[in-house]
Image 1 (cartoon, one colour):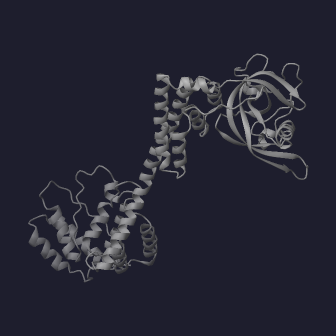
Image 2 (cartoon, helix red, strand yellow):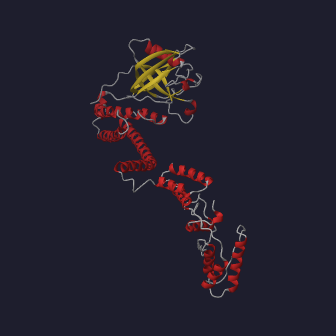
Image 3 (cartoon, rainbow, N blue to C red):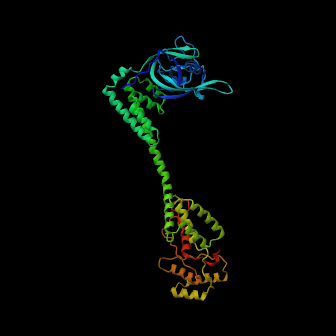
Length: 476
């Protein structure tokens, strides 16, 4: 059943609403600081015991009005018929809007909304002593401006009602097309309420409105509840036909709904990516606490603590230990799934495995035993064995001298590796064979930089690690 239409007087005092639109059913709070708006509120509302209606008319900034005019003839100028230049009224009368010059022309819209004051308060600014008003207005019905004249510092318009009468509304409600549009609008609005219900706890009141308020008023109330452009607000204000109004409102509500759904999807995706590592961290902490309660940590001790004990027992020099501690502190702050965790841990494990304190047993070099070992293991090769004995003799006479590198050249199977093994036996050193067959990059020999993904130590470091000990002259 349609509610009773508002009785609209023939003339209304006009409060300009700059670049905004008040729709029927919407409630807006306005701070009036402009002299013309203050005068209007004071004479039409504050000084009257029976507060009447005022008209809220959208106005454009002059630069916005240059885009295109939707104003009726005789109304879109800065003054009405027979009127004088108007001070630039301000809808919403904020501090920024108050900076507008009063000499700026007002571009009135041809249609507005009659409103009543729900709350009115008066204030005085210090130290200027300027009077201001805060007005809470409720939009009631649409009107069309027939004539606009100045009354002192503000404007008064002769208006005509645009909304349907009670009889016309009752007849329109029987239209099948309007019934279908009403159902579509309510379904879209209910879907929007269901989405908002997950975030807010006040949407229950909105559901009550959806069930009790006539649909032609619901369209204005819903559209006024979220941000749309000024042009779209004007289009809703100009939608006098109920079918057009419901179609526009359904489109705007559906667009607002889709924007909320897309924003939620993006937010959930980002939160899911951020919370994955946090979730893993919490689960690991909980698992560790459970194992502590069950006493199962003896067999599965903390890997980082075990690595630290291994590094402490390695006996590395002070400067190396200081660097290793700094790297260990960095490792403790990282999560296992972070990119640098595995390389940092592999680096520390390598440092802990190197033979910092393990040294080969030092013994005097016996040239006679070395020659017997060479003769026993190799037939012939007289010149080669003689050169090896000379090399060992120099090492015996000058242990601190930097020995030359021996290079054995020959096809496979002639005894190059076995000769090197005999030298290691004679020197009482661990023999490590490093094959360079197929090596294409020098980094395979000297090692890769740790900044690379999958970096590995070189073959020389690997050989030193496998040797389990260092030679006496290199011991720290």
